[in-house]
Every structure is written in C-alpha cells, then in structure tokens.
Image 1 (spheres, protein in one colour):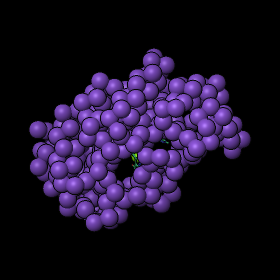
Image 2 (tube, rainbow, N blue to C red):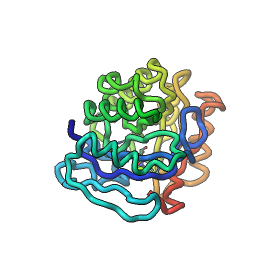
Image 3 (tube, rainbow, N blue to C red):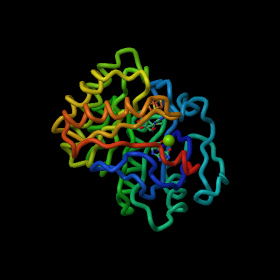
Image 4 (spheres, rainbow, N blue to C red):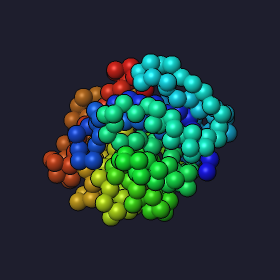
Length: 253
Ligand SMILES: C[S@@+](CC[C@H](N)C(=O)[O-])C[C@H]1O[C@@H](n2cnc3c(N)ncnc32)[C@H](O)[C@@H]1O
Ligand SMILES: Nc1nc2[nH]cc(C(=O)O)c2c(=O)[nH]1
Ligand code: SF4
Ligand SMILES: [Mg+2]
C-alpha cells in the first residue's frame, strides 16, 4: 500500500472552535496527504496540490522543533505508522488526516485509519467533502470530521453549488456512521449573506457550523457578526461558532 504525502507533524489542532465534534486545542498528529482536485484561491497548502510535484514528504523529528527529515514519495504504510508512533507525545487526542485532499487516496487512507484505530488512536478527518461515495467507504473508521463548505468566493471549482450539495451529502454519510461531524465555512470580504443563509439552511438539524475567516483576515467585524447572526437564526444558537487558524498566531505547524 503506497501513500503520497506532504508531511507528518505533531501540533495542536488550531481550527474548529468550540462546536460539537471540534478537536480545537487538542494535541494531534497530522498526516498531510499530497494532491487535491480543487483550487481554493486562499489555500494555504497549495504547494501540495499537484501530487506529481511532491517528490518528497517530510516529518518533524521533534514536535515544534522545526527540524525535519525527508523521505521519497510514495511512502509505505509501515514507514508512515512508524513515523506517527515516533511523534506520539502520549497526549494525542486523535490523528488528523488532511492535505491536499486525503479522500483522493481513499484506499491508502482507509488502510492507515484501520492501523491507527487498531493501535488505539481516534481518527479525525479534514476534508472538502466533495466525494460522499468515497467517504462512505471510510465513514465507519472516522471518529471526528471537519467538512469544509466551500463558499462561492473560494472559487474552488466551476460548479460550486453542486460541490456544496456533495459536501452536505458527505456530512449526512458521516453522521449516519456515528462520526462527530461539523461543517467549516471559510468566509471572505466578498462572501454574500444570502449564501451564508443557504448553507445554514442545508445544515439545519444536521450538523453545527463554524465560521472561519480566511487568513489573512480581510472581512470586517461587522460582516462576521452579520454572518454569525444569520447562521444562528437558522441553525440555532447552539450550532454556530467562530473558528480562527490559531496555529498561525502561535507560529506552529
Ligand atoms: C488545507 S485544507 C486540507 C483539507 C481539505 N482539502 C479541505 O479543504 O478541507 C485544511 C483546512 O485549512 C483551511 N484553510 C486553508 N487555507 C486557509 C486560509 N487561507 N484561511 C483559512 N482557512 C484555510 C481549509 O478551509 C480547511 O478547513
Ligand atoms: N495546527 C494546525 N491545525 C490545523 N487544523 C487544520 C489544519 C489543516 O491544514 O488541515 C491544520 C494545520 O495545518 N495545523
Ligand atoms: S480543497 Fe483543501 S487542499 Fe484543496 S485547494 Fe481547497 S483548501 Fe486547499
Ligand atoms: Mg493547515
């Protein structure tokens, strides 16, 4: 089984805020997969989008050390498990599978999730949710999931409305499998209020939603308050929260 990776590191989950299913502030080991089929204009991992150009993957030899070792892609399952275990600081809440888009490598992802589950770790999936049929293959192995809602201003793909509907479908699949799942909406200064209302109406009685400003932040406090208020009116005050990429302020991976 081969995996095409970008990096593996131990850090705090910097996103997700305080909604049910979030692992915000928890210690995680992150496995970042290379390759993505979308192209969000604000993606902070765009160097890993074209997997064919990610010839090596790296892992941090010591958490927060900023010191890395490099290995050639593709990685074997055993060497990935070995690196994850070498980064285990004993306080790990879950393993975060992110990317790039991890579900593009669904079989290797499934094999790794199975191994980490057998080793007693919880699995946290960070996904754009565009492939509900692939997510259905691994949902039983996913303890927690953050599913992005790609706002129109992400310009992630041509048919952005269809992508949103597939993301909501993925949330339904995960929920049905017993995963603690929440939606993450990255907003920008150009995000339209009526779109926030549409996303919230799709998520009503399904999953909570965090509103995460695109970094670097470009929208006003007033806009953030407006989006939050509109979402809370539709989803209920218990089901909305803010999320910021706190790791960027802590200057950690
Ligand atoms: C790099 S993506 C990888 C996982 C998956 N492809 C996805 O988009 O959800 C991980 C998370 O980082 C967030 N993210 C990436 N760039 C960002 C930025 N500039 N500002 C805010 N969030 C960002 C995405 O919204 C997503 O929730
Ligand atoms: N610390 C930290 N928290 C994160 N939450 C989501 C991330 C991601 O890139 O998936 C991420 C990340 O890259 N670093
Ligand atoms: S889906 Fe995720 S990895 Fe892909 S471009 Fe968007 S933010 Fe980046
Ligand atoms: Mg990140």
